[in-house]
Image (cartoon, rainbow, N blue to C red; front, side, top):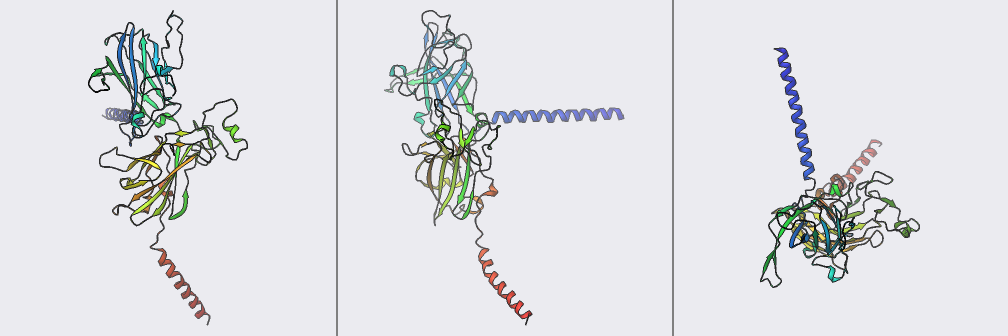
Length: 458
């Protein structure tokens, strides 16, 4: 009986070990699949729609449209790059509103030469100022796409493509594979193309409806972990009731003299002689990040200062500073999570929109610059900052300056989560109730001890 019982024990141990390993693998796969999830924008994505609008003798003409359904994450210059792999031996005869970056080998064609013969073309938007005969609606913005909450009218980008050596019916057309989106760097993961109901179009006079011959959609989601290995921004804090200034955490975005700091580039001292030549070497265009040497090494710092306290209101000042000498942030935005945003009275120099990712919870706000005033955050230097003040109305049931309540819970800059200081480092509120007691007792105790000393020596 003993050998059989030991075998049972070993078998149970093996099964338990295998079960734990299986659960671990499942948890890892779950984490991988959800790392692109954004709690403040749970439904945010970029949807790419291909609408076949015409059949040709050897293929089709399609309009490709990118919709940025992300509330606060936009695509800035130098813009998006869309790539894919053809399912068969397709070629691109012509394009409007965009172009491929490489024509490829078209030597087998005589007469008419295709625009691109690559199996895996990469497409970029055309620049503003493109001749009208090469444009279509929503094109030619240099690949810049605004966020949906900030400017929905400019959260769309389109181009037209004429495809040859392809199917000429709904049953013979093959959708492209391995879709990639760079905006402008990595960060987006695109799913497979899915055939959906054909898109319907309404004429300008709204009296006629037409529809695409065939439509397929691709959904792309963003992950900050894929975009860069280190954070890109940090938060510092201060208040009127405490002299302590809580700086960004040390090495929040990397450390000085660290070769392992991927993507953060090198740093430069602002007092360096001939700084301009260091930033942009003569005859060379370099987009590699070059940040000012700081303890945090972040390209962007957001400073939140609790400024004033009124009877029914309180006031905070927000300052965004750019420490990157090689980056100007156009159309920047910031998302702040704070419980008092349900009673924001006024934003003095920033545009404001409430974000409500969850019903009944209004604690998240999107802030961005006023057009032609401070919507452009210049590179590091005297002009490399923007600021505004926020006026909040107090809710007597929740308002307090204690335990860091007046400071934000989370801050995003251009869609990336910023590194916050640890909660125990927040500026504390002085305990006023105990200080008067100490100040009254101290002279009494001093007088008592002095008299006791005198009587002892009499």
